[in-house]
Amino acid sequence: METDKSIVRLSNVTVAYEGQKPALKNVTLAIAPGSYLAVLGPNGAGKTTLFKAILGLIGPTKGEVSVFGKEPHRARRQIAYIPQREAVDWRFPLRAIDVVMMGRENHIGWGLWPRASDRLAVESALRQVGMWERRHAPLDELSGGQQQRLFIARALAGDAPLFLLDEPFNEVDAGTQELLLDLFTKLVKQGRTVIVSLHDLELARRRFPEMLFLNKEVVAHGKTDEVFNPAVLQQTYMEQVVKWEEDGETRSVLDGHGLAHRV
Image: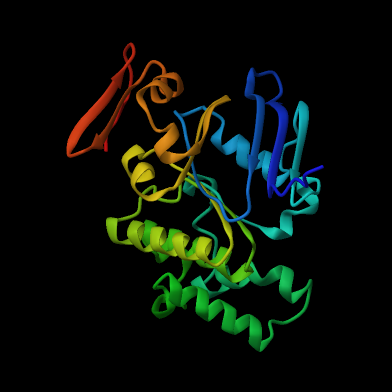
């Protein structure tokens, strides 16, 4: 029998918050090591809930989730998670370098002081995101793009094999976006698995080799050139106007009235 090599596996998973309709419904999904995956879908599609299920922060109402062949909460040290910006209290009184050092917690150990190797890992992470010169700046004095770079650096310092990034390009400038995209590509080449939720269809089509279209249920999952098509977009976004660039022209799917996803 063939061995399952998936790094993340969901089997017929339904997740429902108390008193609400399911946020995820009958999701079956397998993500291979080294994947560079864009998770796409409208607001309320369950993208953040999917990440929380992988992290073990919320348990499935039905079905099973495994990460590295273990229950999610047992694999959490192997996962670097960057939540959406609005989920973070940016007024917390810490310097940039202190935030990144928090990413070394699993390496340092509880109550122990950082070693030289920890300080070097933090410096390397800050340099990779272009934030070494701002290492002593208070968190609340950084711009939105700098704060996002900082949290990416914290994830890098932890040296986890799996990265989950929930809308990492919100409120960042074009330069930061390109820096992060290049960094994610480098991580994948190093053998890490990078899963990113985002709204920008053209960016996803241009820079991600694999896509997961989600609207509470899995609409499509596979190579970008196989699943990025009008039928999948229409089924995913339903009552929304979806636009993207292709062959130098603006293409769209229209089904009812709704929000335009401009690219």
